[in-house]
Image (cartoon, rainbow, N blue to C red; front, side):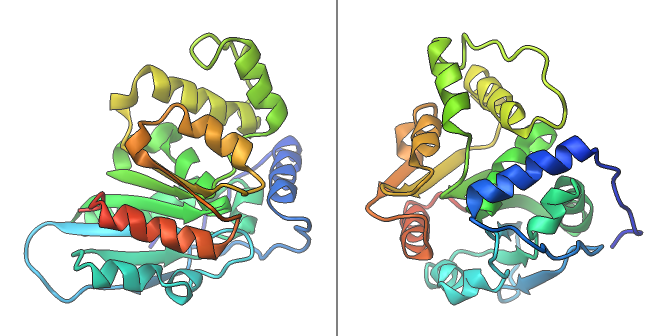
Length: 255
């Protein structure tokens, strides 16, 4: 789809992204090496006429792209008669560590999809993939029609407390933020979303009540419309995410 390309990423960014990996999982040793283009699994609908809808699925760390089929998310779309193609992307940790994830998504998946006639593209992901789906909106909000976040990591407790002490995102002054500071950049994205939500596609959030990242997820829930948030009894696991996905589909959010 595109020629070989590799970004130069500072050592500082590598350290910060390793910290992100550690936040998600106890061990992030030996991540796979990124490939160009991104590998994908395409689940096509039967040929139909009319406008084309694509759902792009980003997996969590340690998950294969086939996990979405294994845990019933593809079937859930088909059973509800949603006229959409789905593409599960092998966006593993290596792409986050070398800083190329968002360029690869743009150049290898979303750009070609738009050029190929898809007029509505949704992003959805679990865990690390949910973080990637949200962070993609920083600079690419116009590319997608909506985002579904399943158990995302939104920020560390210290950063959230800093924002709360300032009186919330509207009053929080992030000061100078380096491009490599993904934690504060994500908060700046949320600050801008709260200030001007119409600039962004709808964001849907689902998480388990006992998710280890529930503090940051509730922080995000507080700035989203209530009807775009689902909290279920459960943890940071597929059992919870599959049920949240089904509930969102039953609401007819993707169409």
